[in-house]
Length: 349
Image (cartoon, rainbow, N blue to C red; front, top):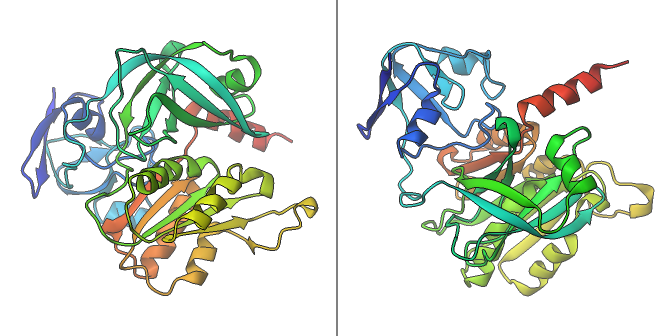
């Protein structure tokens, strides 16, 4: 039997089917709530259960600690109701009018950005267009019901081709296809736009972006949107990677820093190689941010990258006075089957 969920303070109610998560039910009925990774890592869909009982069929998600659970906090992408619920959560009205669509597309260009990063440029049919907000993502739909999520690296005003950045994952079904066998003209099926990580254009606050690895992709979309629409807001991008080769569009970011008076770019390497002759910032990217800023409460903060980076940065920034309502995050988690394969490989002797 379906159960009813009521959102406060807004008062919206909707039904959740048996075994369905709260987030899936809301999105199915056109109710937009904050979310990101769908895997319980990014904590973007965090909300408080005011009344009712919930369960996590797959166990507590990594994005919530035991104290969070004891306070009644829940991640809506993983939680399943066991009774009618009242949940304290804020609907997102900004994306009202955007429709999630499933569309065919063809690979128009394969662009090797680094030894393990490929840009796919996807061309939609001439009669179709995908409306989205800068920073949102799409899912590539695979046979067998699997899907892979990728942020759009292009802004909405330049969407003749959709650009996604695919990182090579050893044994990864889709990434191996992209790097080893994919040909120009290959037919793919995508679904989008997805996610509540997008540029907050109704704000005039300074912008602080913290990206790790291919978390640069949604930041690129937001930066292009700002620059090419001549929006004047102070913006700083911190981009963390292992070595200089992993800063696969460093020259583009440096060019923006020269051309845009309100933009600052800070690359940070955790494991620079001898051949890099690196004289820039070293260490973890969010630690560089913490060292540079004394005040975070007046910034809009965008975090995009691996879940550990996003979680660590968010926790540290909150301790330093950042406004939790002004931290927006997108955790680049692996699909469950890929994550399991990587964990198995890491545990092998």
